[in-house]
Image 1 (spheres, rainbow, N blue to C red):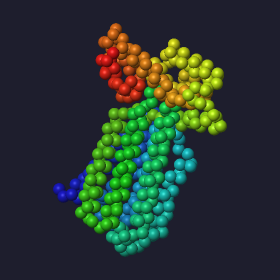
Image 2 (cartoon, helix red, strand yellow):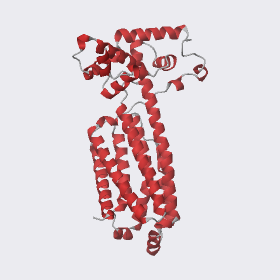
Image 3 (cartoon, rainbow, N blue to C red):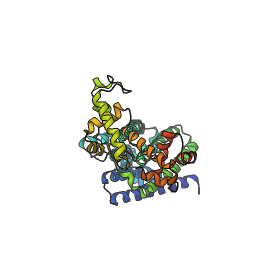
Image 4 (cartoon, helix red, strand yellow):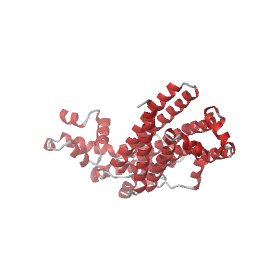
Length: 382
């Protein structure tokens, strides 16, 4: 098998796996159908774009307009991925008319092609296709895709940053797996897209051997990533849950004139001091942190402090994220259990569930943050 046949085989397998996963996502029963469908659309657009490697040359020459249209579909790939990230991060996300703005590059590209390519004669289309790499139309298309890559790479990571900040201020035991999945996925995909830009530069340099090998390596990476998507989708359905995007960060709640006028280290007025004392006493006596799904809204209802005031109290006046504030109590309780000789028979896994964690990795990370030791090392040293 020569390298071109190998490249074609990998592309065909990648397209097949993508379409298979897209079919699964369209048909699987889940609460967050929008996220699944957006991801499925992303996979379908990607498969259409990637299919160009193995499409028969004779078919292209008899359906030039279809091939030209296939080129423009790549302008829908990153918008679909961006909307997918939004739908996974925020459970209340819904598609709105303004989201149609994301398809403007696709529409403009087709309008350009309408006047420049679609209405050409068959002879002119053949001539264009054979010299497409030197055409202004292809340069324009690559420019659009390059700008999209930059724009959406920034946009996706800003969405993830907002998601993480909201979770830290309003939830405990944040679904770190969701953030890690989306972050890893975004990193991998945008690395591939930037590599694709580099590959196209090689293509225009007329170094055929280098272009074929760079294309082969890229296709191998694409196939590997696609298979990774399949494994994740099948084994981790919890990755398709989100949070409420309408939750505000403390810096957005607190009036601007008050942000710098209060010393967070100890000059709180008497009201704040009493609220902090009440909060700490409640946490110590009632131990609401034992609930692994505790949110700031639920704690607000229990302690009878408005959620807005409680958020400012913890995140601003106590200078802690709600996530860190609650986990500190969980770690302290875990430390007491680990030191207790009567509870030596409890495993670390049993202890982390007992104190309110639901993930071994998040427990170990939080424990080491507060003690500079692993739970096992702390127990052995006690």
